[in-house]
Image 1 (cartoon, one colour):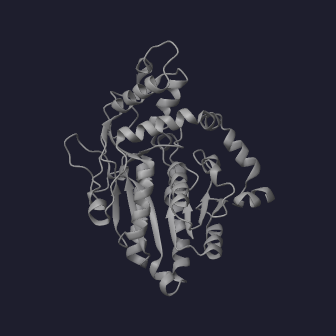
Image 2: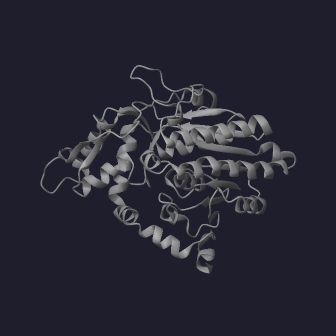
Image 3: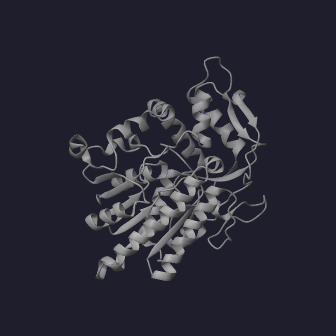
Amino acid sequence: MIFVTGGAGFIGANFVLDWLAQTNEPVVNIDNLTYAGNLENLASLNADQRHVFVRGDIGDSGLLASLLASHQPRAVLNFAAESHVDRSIHGPEDFIQTNIVGTFRLLEEVRSYWTRLDGEAKQGFRFLHVSTDEVYGSLGKQDPAFTETHRYEPNSPYSASKAASDHLVRAYHHTYGLPVLTTNCSNNYGPYHFPEKLIPLMIVNALAGKPLPVYGDGQQIRDWLYVKDHCSAIRRVLEAGKDGEVYNVGGWNEKPNIEIVNIVCALLDELQPRADGKNYREQISYVKDRPGHDRRYAIDASKLERELGWKPAETFETGIRKTVQWYLANPQWVTRVQSGAYREWTSKHYEHETIQGSAARAAA
């Protein structure tokens, strides 16, 4: 049994789906179902008894203690986070509460649980913390990519809160001996990505005939990682990562934002052309840059390849095509996310409840 936090969000849900596709080991999945947490991401597991879903907050110490004691996981993987830079600029307190206070309370309960384990169970236990390259700050155009020893220089409330959570995880290892692993990933993309992020926003707006907003000059550079590659990297780190180590996870795909937008437009021109025959690029609109916008991120993932033999399976070209095709094939998912219908449905049906397969869902 593994214990996953934030497993109804974009990366967490993809991880849970991939985990249960790769192994029969059950998953206890806790998610507070805030704006980006969506049970529809996990709809294919409705009748799967290997998946136990609990609506709850990682800041709820009592709930965490109860779940850990009753399910006895061999590992805890922390995906739970507030994760959108723009939202952190306009409302930073949620990021402090979830990413810092929530991580602290999770660490405390995990430490308490771990200290009571014996023998092989204690020896084999791991806490894997999923973080971001944004903790490292911004790079100049010619600077070498971020390595695991790069100094932390966060520039937004989001990245600062994630940096704090990383430091807490490190401290719990060095102070208490808690066996931890940390991964710092580059920009993810793929299925189930909330439509406020760059790639899904471009797809959704293009299809709706809306402007495609590009910050500033569009030359902000990011390294892009297909989400299923990220999931495979996390599985590998959990399997063979060295206790206390940090592993950067990247896709080796540095591209400026405007190039990403143009690639998405070209794919849509091919796969679902505009009715008027014009190019989707005509919808691009440059808007005022956001405050403190980091100019470039780049991940050096060579440690992960060198020590654990992992490298991404997808190129950007193959991954972005799969992503666009997924959004074209799932318009109802997009519609429900944009309307907020999934949040209304969730609030009506689930309030700190545990769901395990269809039988428990029916009982609820």
